[in-house]
Length: 319
Ligand code: UT7
Image 1 (cartoon, rainbow, N blue to C red):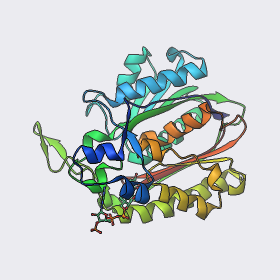
Image 2: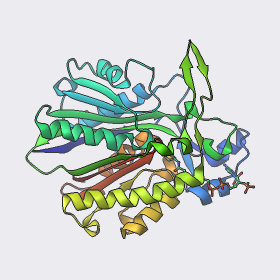
Image 3: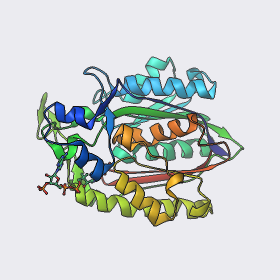
Image 4: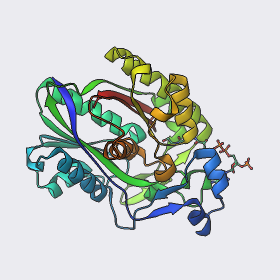
């Protein structure tokens, strides 16, 4: 029994915000620096009041529509997010309520930019065990809410959005292998160290990052985990049709592709237009490439993420 993707969907809020738009808002930056260092040209930023659950709901509705199934038939809903609407209830429960589903198991996964790959791996295990048959897996973020807009080293990198997939138990191949890892000793290089305590935010509520340490870590683990899932599935990396790495920086994406020997034209890239949308980046890129016809049924797609924790995860699927 496989967990097979039967629908994908995504949602980006509002209009693209260019690098020049950010400079015009008073951030001490320029298009040339951002494009050269990251490959990012624009990103989407949610209006105040727009939440992860709203973006995730729209992505989910589009995925359900592609799958041709009703939300009431889902028995598992997992949302990967580090920017939930509330401390609780989970964003998964909020989306479940808005979809009108009753009874499915619903919970959030917090693995930052690896969150979607973690959620996909968890859903796959539920389905393979036979306990669940139809899962909705969402990555949804409003990272713009946790950015320090006075820190030009981080605020230009991120964007908001959501992506979703519907998985179904199937005898036809679907997810072939998954892997998830973490190294908590690296929690200091990317974090949001604030807390809610006694009704107040205490500490620093904004994202902080040691960019160069993150860069080196990301390139190493993205190559390692891609090889791991390919080996577990018995598939050569040369036989991967599409690589969808976490969309954080074009230089990380290109270095990963190069290490794996995967041609540039087999790598799906959205970072130029979406920026880094954390847990939403992989399902957003997947949905784009499914809808524009690049990803075809029967092809092998390798998705992978890396992010705060540090965490990293991957899945190899036959689409
Ligand atoms: O999901 C995982 C999340 N994060 C990542 O994947 C990020 C990984 N890291 C990176 O992508 C890169 O390290 C960055 C893009 C964040 C930074 O690139 P870098 O080549 O490591 O630059 P840097 O931080 O060493 O900064 C170089 C210079 C500094 O100026 P000085 O000290 O050399 O005068 C910065 O102040 O660039 C300056 N700088 C900027 N200049 C214009 C930093 N941010 C900006 C900016 N605009 N936005």
